[in-house]
Image (cartoon, rainbow, N blue to C red; front, side, top):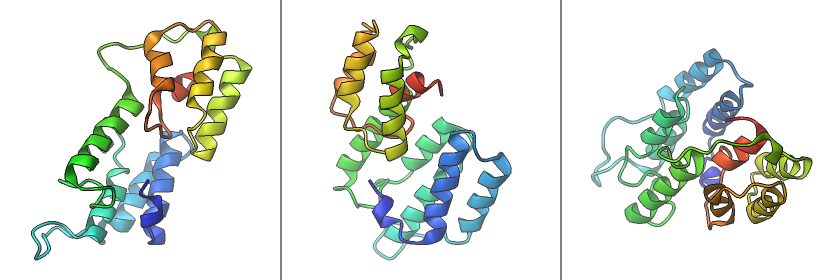
Amino acid sequence: MIWPHLTEPSLTEVVEVAERFADGHAPPAELASAGRAIEGLRAYRPDPSGGAGRREQLVSLAYATTDKKPLSAALWVTAYGQPFAGLLGGEAAELGLVRSLIRDIFGNPFRPVAFDHSWRTEAAVALARGMYESRDFAAMPVLADALDDAGCGHPDVLAHCRGAGPHVRGCWVADLVLGKA
């Protein structure tokens, strides 16, 4: 959602390293190095309008992705009134989006799902992998059908897949299907 606004190569590189780290393809030292590379770009003082400028917020958002703990990284994103630097419709809309993204990534911690390995069919894995690699999660309802066909009757799993989203890389259902969670 904010990728087109990360116009500085150093910011996109930080996010790419964080994604590789989350997937187990980048060591902690590379993640730390990426964070240090943009440390100097962050502004620690408010601009004259009373808040951090858009560029500084985007830098801080990219920097937040370098936290080694996923929940900490997600909470860092909420550190500003407008976590997406006002790019997505204002404070209320952006905080609502942050809540939705956290639910998409972490699910309901009070109702964890015991994923049955028999649900991990070739069709389900191929759908989840395709969405994960393309960053296009429009096929989530199709994944729900594939899981349903595999015998998954778990209401939270199916409702999540058929829900409006947003769905992103790290979606808890896609991660379960791919064996990442």
